[in-house]
Image 1 (spheres, rainbow, N blue to C red):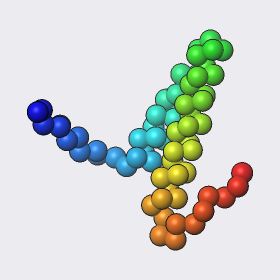
Image 2 (cartoon, rainbow, N blue to C red):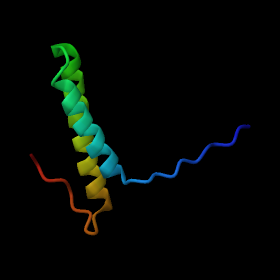
Image 3 (cartoon, rainbow, N blue to C red):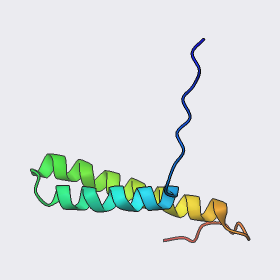
Length: 67
């Protein structure tokens, strides 16, 4: 059985998601409508993941606010 390689993250999940989101926004501006839409959907997914992560890591662990 192979050993699993451990990857030590140098930045938080929120920081990585924010960086990915910004890169996707820049890329979405230059792509055709089909690809741009896919990138925008990933941006939204990253933002949602960030909010969920912040909520899970919060001290009070309050339920998410309705949009």
